[in-house]
Image 1 (tube, rainbow, N blue to C red):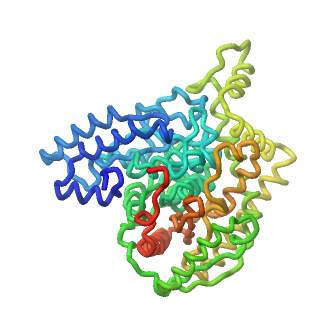
Image 2 (image 1 turned 90 degrees about the vertical axis):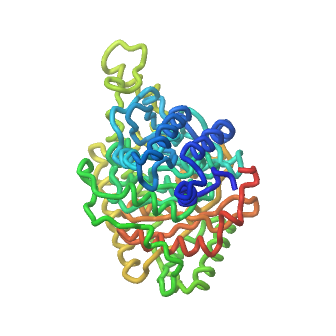
Length: 489
C-alpha cells in the first residue's frame, strides 16, 4: 500500500516502529500533490516547499529527542476560511484574494502545538456559501471518484483532498452540512461537532450561530483522533463550552448491542434518490444484525428547518460580511469618486453571485417591517426544531438518516438553479439549527460507483455515541477495502 493511502493512525504506527520517517511521509504527499492536484484542483494555496523544509527540520529534532508527540510530523490540509498566520486566507473570494492573516485560528494553533505539517489551504465555496465548490473565485474542485462530478461543498476542497490522498486528513467547517455533505459525495468520513465544542475563533464567519469546525478523514478512528486535538474550551470564543476533556478514541468499541437507533420516516420520503434509500436500508439491516434496536419514528421538521435555516444563515451572513467594505484589508475598486462608490463598487466587483444573493436576502429579512415576519419567526421555528430533537433523544441514542438526498451530481448541472442546490442540504441543515453533532460515513455506492453517505446524529455533546455507532458499522462493511474510485484515485 502507498504511503498516501494509509490512515493517520497507520502512519503513526509506522513512525513509532521506525518503518517511515517524517520526511518520507511528507515527501510522499508532496509528490502526490505535484502529480494529482492538476486533476482535482483541491488547493487554493499549496505549501509543498515549506512542508518539506519543516519535515526535514522536524525529523532532525525528533531524532535528537527535542520533539515528542504522537502527531509530530503528520501532514494536514486546512480549509481556506481558517486563519493561518503569514499564509493567505482567501475564503475562495476575490474580496480576500491577497489577505494574509496576522494570527492563527485557535484550531490551527492546536495543530501547530502538535507539530503537524500544513500542506496548504483548501478550496471551498466562496465564504462557505454553496453545496458544490463551484462558487469559488479561483477554481472548481473535482470529485476524485469521477472528475466530471462535484465534490460537494462548501468544504469540497477538504473532502476531495482526503479522498484523492493529497492529504491524510483535513479541517473543514460546517454551517448547514458543509463537512458532512462533501464527505458523503467523496466517500470519506466527516464529523460536525456539537456547537460550542470546538472554538470558532479565527474561522471567518458565515453564520455565527450555525458555523462549526470539524474533521474530514479517511476513517472514524482518525476523526476521533483529530477531534481530541481541536475540541476544548477557548476563552477567545464566547460561544465555546467549558466541558471536561474527553478521549474520543476510547469510544471506538466494536459493539452496538442494545443501542437504540431512531429512523425518521420524513428523511426517507419524496426527493430522496431510490439508490440512496436502498443503501440506507441495507445499513439499517446491518445494524440490526449487529444487535442495535431500530425503530421508525416521525421527526416532522425538515421542511420547516430548511426555510428557517436559510433565513437565519442569510441574516447572519449579511451582518458578518458587512465588514468587507473596500476600506480596510479587503479588495478595493481601482476607480471611485467618493466613499459611497468605494463601498458599492468594491462589494459589487469582489463578491460572487451566490454571496450577493445571500447578503440581499439576509438584509431584507433583517430590515424594518420584515424582521418580525421572517427572522423572528425563523428563530421561533428553530426552538421547535430543538424541541423535536429533544423528544427524539428521550427515546433514542442515535438518529439515522441519509447525509444527502442524492449522490454527487455533474459539474454545472445545478449552478443555474439555486433552489435545487439548496435542497441538497435538506438532510443536514436541521442538525446545525439544533446545534447537534452529526457524522457522515460511507455506506455503499450507487450503480455508477459513486459513494453514498449515511448520517448519524447524536444528542448534544454525545460525540462518543455517534463515533461508536459509526466505528462499529465501518468495521462491519469495510468500505475503504471494498470500494475504490474507478478513476484510479
